[in-house]
Length: 538
Image 1: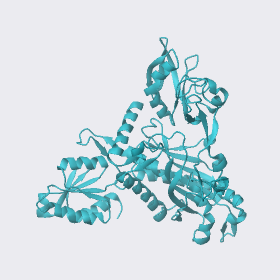
Image 2: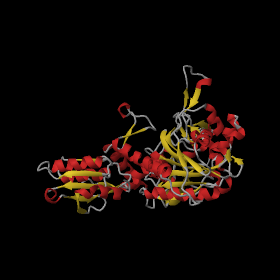
Image 3: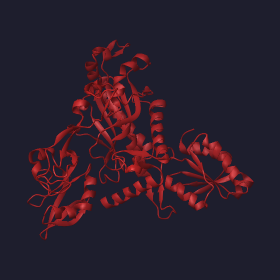
Image 4: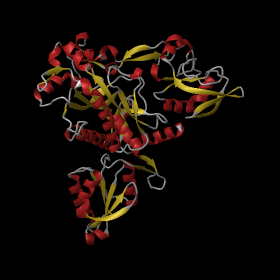
């Protein structure tokens, strides 16, 4: 299964480059790890995702659990903010990952991304109680299995282990140890083990022991300087999240806009994290885009709103095409909770089964009850104190609202849409079809004159210009019709309209459906209404 997932991901990455979805940043100079550029079609896809989120959250929000339409406003805060913002939020001192160095190769990795192959003396699987035989760097169990399938035989040999792989798969690993089967398990290497016995744990780079350091904290924020001088006083950070811009503007919005609790502030914007080991295409990168909501509520209604936002956000991802069993909701265990959620109603992740996480899942969006932690912190650090509290005139009550935060990744969301849409189909000329939801599809429709003569290009051109006023559509007069269909399959265009000889006599054309390959004829005058209905927008 892991090999199949790796093969699928390789195909997806190749298609993304071939069809102008995603390119390596600075590719002509050899690229830069952890940074990606979106090509013309990728830009359209990501823009469709962000536009749908903004429309459904800010411009046309749904009714909440109380039956009232949500009160939502938008914000666009700066990437660089006063350094005190990050001191108040805890990022300056606490936004750290435990890092381990290999003293021999000089390479560094996150301690929580170290997986090991564990075997106990009795031959039973053991998760963290013994020293692993070999280790690897992975962010999920599925990725660890994939890496081990590819490199396990070489690693076992390098480690000098008198064993070889007998079988390997998602249901478990069996090693042949001197002619006897031995069960083994891939599991995270416990941080306590690294602190206690780092010199006995094999390096994931060479499988040598005695070369790893104990975990040390490493701050993930990018530093920069503001002004002409580069000194301690001018140091600033690129924001690691967009949320703090909302909290820092809470008083501005409540003072100038007619909002009342419960209400939300939404923001789409870039964030930056100096990931030491960016990996898995655009899933874990150093520059990424977030779609975040901070929804301010009365503390007593936290449970109700937290549950509602969980279900609402899960349903939204389904509504734009992630409808398969690849989507799940997972509640955080108590030891996973962030500092701001320790006393809250909880935190849940909406997760997607990416090819590189299979059979496991990767985070797509988090829904957290942040309590009133952030507003209290900013009230203290800014010196505003009670002035940052919300005042309810009807109840004559002043308090710090609690916050429910649905925070989604635009890049991860785009990648999930690509992975979900990808289907191998040997029966098609292209060999592959991208089944995007029509609302998400980069190109909504293609207009083809069957031949480049007899007035067909002129009819196609008139239709193209009419539809182009509303949607991103393309007109193509080159190559035979089969090749034009194949190209549209590969980029995920849901509908193709073909003008042929019959069009010249009765003003009808052929509609080809991408997913089913079915065809029907409709009048040219019905095409605009047809697309509006299928795409779900006017």
